Image (cartoon, rainbow, N blue to C red; front, side, top):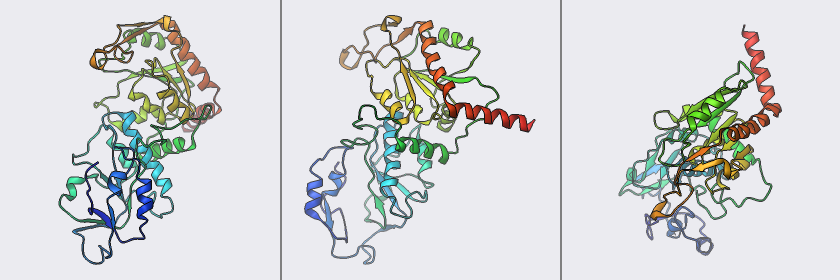
Length: 360
């Protein structure tokens, strides 16, 4: 919040200083651009034309403050709001061009397991503030995008109205990422429902009897079952390909469930147990327009212990669980039955089988 001081940001423009001060009353990290823009000064000279710049950036540039880049849920707050900002800025001809620049508002070199998502927005390397240390930098076209934790913002702080679902913006964001990163939808050789169980390689929120559950799922003839671990050993675009070709996506409460954004429209999500955080991923599924199921009967699960949260406090997120296998299968069946009834799923299966027959 203290990168720019008085006189370190400005330009030649029609400047409404009082309006800016009023708009900047709310000042908080990741929630507003107030810390930077309150220091804006109108110049009487045209900096670029008058040679006041050490560097002039000609291409459109998006300056971004990022949420937690190690966590898919939080980092996709950044990507979603960047995408929404393209629509806000759609009056400019270059809005959806990827020949632009992205400047991360940090001094560290950006890296993330999810960095390939930036390829949906730019074809150029990602910059950080070190790139321009000690320089006067002038931009011909700069955008300060929507921020990941805005008050009444999108994705993270969205004040959802009861019954609101199937957001067109969330749907479009999903399609933008899938299309831009060229994630394929595979044709099917049969009518089986593809079930993907996301396994956690973490200390907490693992399914202790996961092996038993997977073996039970494999015995059901109408399913094609895969157990996956989405970690650094699997490239992110490969993860997206797995997800995009899934009909029923299963996982414990955790950031990996953010993959639901990239499921096909007919898919179902089974958050095995929400760990006493009932709204986070049910809301995300609702916005994406997906069927959502979670554990209903707490007498049919076993919590390993009371949970060992920060500071020694007990919490359901900081322990592991075993689940009744029959109940688990029942909930998966609810998801699979929903998928089978979807017309778009059936149309896709029929088109896939027809294409295979034609190729034979």
